[in-house]
Image (tube, rainbow, N blue to C red):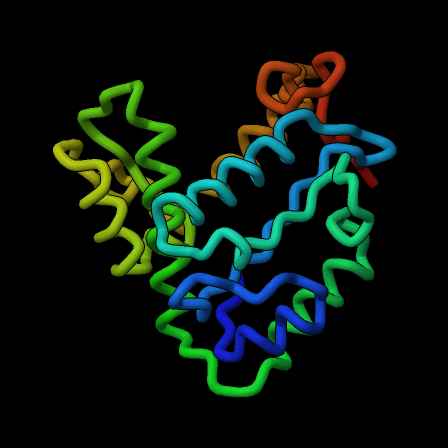
Length: 204
C-alpha cells in the first residue's frame, strides 16, 4: 500500500481521469496472481479483489486510488507484470511532498482489521489468537480487537507459544509430515489440482 501527497501528478502520469474525491492522499497497489507456470493457484486474484473492494468501501480510499493488478485484466497496464508493478510503485513513490508514515500505517491497520472481521464473522469466534510480527504491533492488535469485539483477542503467548516461535514450530511439523510422506498441499486450501507432498529431505 502506498500513500501519495500529489494526486494530480499521478493521475496525469498513468492516464487516469482526475479524482473527484476530496481526499486523494491514500493510494493502494494490490497484486493478485493465480497463473504461475509451475504451480497455478486459485484464490489469489479473488483475495486481491476483495481487499481492493474493502479499501474502497470501508477504509476511506477513493475508488480510483486503489490500483488493482491481477490475471485476466483486459487492459495490459492492469496486468501484474514486473514492469507494470515497478512502474506504478515508483510513480507513487516519486510524487512531490512528504508521505506520512502514520497514514500508511493507519490505512494498513484498518484494512487488515476489516478483512479479518469479515472473514471471521460467520464463525462467531469467542477467542482469536494472533501470531507473527504483526502481533507486536500495538495499533494493529488494538484495531483487530475493536473490530472482532466481543471476541477475546490475544497473542499466542497466552498459550505458551511465542509469536515469533510459531513459524519455526510450524516448519518442524511440516518437515515431519514430509518425512512421513503426508500431503500438505491440499486442493481445498491452495487450489492445487491434487494433494501433494511439499518439500524434500536431503541427507549427507
